[in-house]
Figure 1 (cartoon, rainbow over the protein chains, first blue to last red):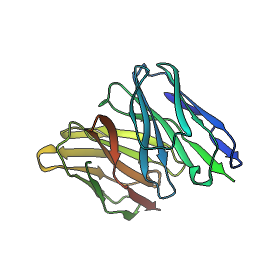
Figure 2: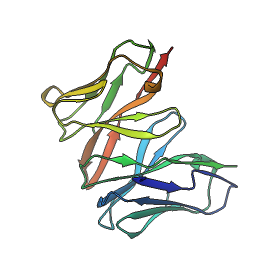
Figure 3: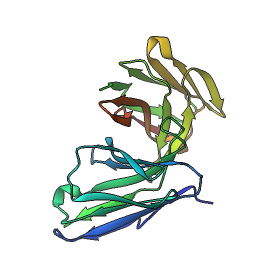
Figure 4: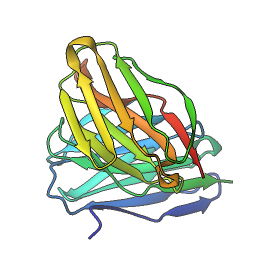
Length: 112
Length: 111
């Protein structure tokens, strides 16, 4: 069984479009995250949710909005996509803020 | 925030060789995690190791929290060990919490 899953795996879109990436975890964790990995492989946290409450919000553009319908899901919605948004986006989860972190397979977003 | 430095940045090994990767961090931490990102991009949690030593097959990790470093040992390396190895530590401050990652060690194991 896949512990943390994301869809889609690849996303190619035009500038200005709106897109969403879905994430689900079946580990029973209470904390979920979105990370962005740039072309140099640097991983930076974007958002985290603990028990459906946003607990951190890094200085990302407000075009990015996380949505958590329940504890097992954390979706990422992006408005007005820009070229610089091209990256790999990873969803992750953990039990509590300091538990072991497990990552989804990543979504490679390419903005043309 | 906390600084995490990994060394070496790149490493090339002949299959069967052993290696040690290092992770230094600038402040005291409650835990440390090691991850492997394989050539297909998947990030795999290797160890959750706030202190002491853990072993998993050919891999082992040691964290000396008082001296602010952790080591990842890979013995009898195989081509499937290739990829990027990251260490990450939690940082909380100014009402935020995040895992801060090092820049990684890129390992290439050649047959």
